[in-house]
Length: 224
Ligand code: ADP
Ligand code: MG
Image (cartoon, rainbow, N blue to C red; front, top):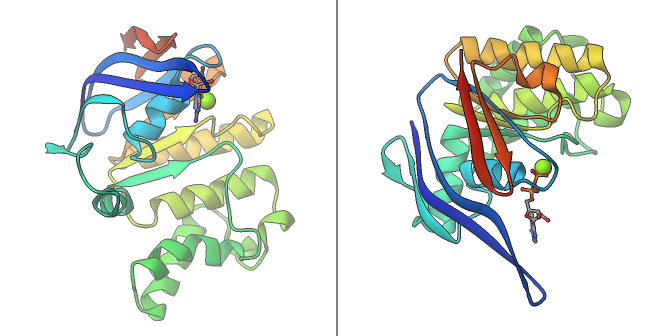
């Protein structure tokens, strides 16, 4: 599903160059469940952002479902992202003025779906996540765990094939974190390819394939 070949990402900071990703080669099969661990600054978020088409490599090739995506225009990348990729962040990134329902509905609005269809899909997903009674609350009226589950609903309502999560439990207590991991794992069991960046060893070791990064390189790739 994913092939990265010789991916480098160099940030220019003043007169310094930061080599955030150093010749990354990686293949991910459909339906895999990967965790990505490593010290702060090792390049985990940079790699996830490139996988999610939120950032472009300085050099190298990225094939997503057989298609070279690094050379696409911004608009084309946005389209691929909208159809195939869901992204979940540590700090949720919900729209503060919108209700939980409206946050989840947003991708469907942007995709031009009619209101009745939207309502049905959003209600279904809120029910699956046990959030029906929170539908009309704003994010600031929800707990961290509820916010993250709303963010996951928003990330997956377009039925992406790839779900990327950057420290999804990093801002949650352990019980809420466990609930969020359970939701992510259910989605993976349903077929979605899942990549979770985490510094929590308990979360990381649950994945069936575990990558470790140091200084922009993948130094360990463990299965089973
Ligand atoms: P991690 O997620 O593993 O903590 P990051 O991928 O965020 O690491 O960062 C890897 C390296 O790249 C760090 O040295 C960081 O300071 C640098 N970096 C990341 N993003 C930027 C940016 N937008 N501009 C400059 N340097 C960056
Ligand atoms: Mg990071």
